[in-house]
Amino acid sequence: MPETVSSLRIEVTPARGWQRVVQHLAATALAGWFLSRWLPTLDRYILRRTKGQQTAASFLTGLPIVTVTTFGAKSGRPRECPLIPLPDGEKIILIASNFGNTRHPAWYLNLRTHPEAILTLNHQQAFYTAREATDPERPLYWARAVKLYPGYQLYEHRARGRKIPILILTPKQKEPL
Image 1 (tube, rainbow, N blue to C red):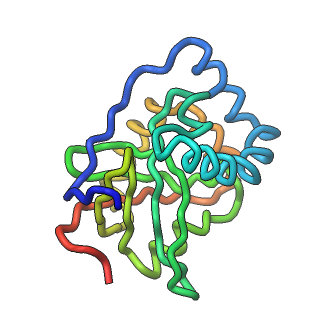
Image 2: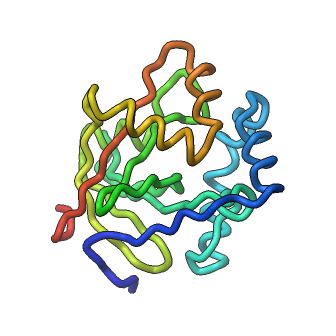
């Protein structure tokens, strides 16, 4: 059973040169199309095989990856998705870019309906409550996200006017219902 903590300690380290090249390639339209279909499945497989220590995305890009468990908007069932977290003290920021697709990702729709999430990193789980960033918060978090992963700028362009949601997850002391 994973250890439960009030919030996760996410380490953000600079990407190596070859990982920055992979980040640039991953942000292209063709790679975005391919990755949006296959990377979450591949990441879940590698997470299981490495006992939660690694994902394909984290190895190839040097970006931190956490497993975010949301609860289905219609079914209420738990759904897992590996995502890039942007730590902000105790809070975690998530960017609902969906690889630049014109539709919102399912995990975002789940959090809009059920704003409770479980984040897992290195066998530690933490419980969070999600809310969307306010208009004054958006530019600050967007700039920080683009600094972490410049591909978000390309995703914003490809989203064709879709306002990419930014979610702020605040630690919760007890398990979600």
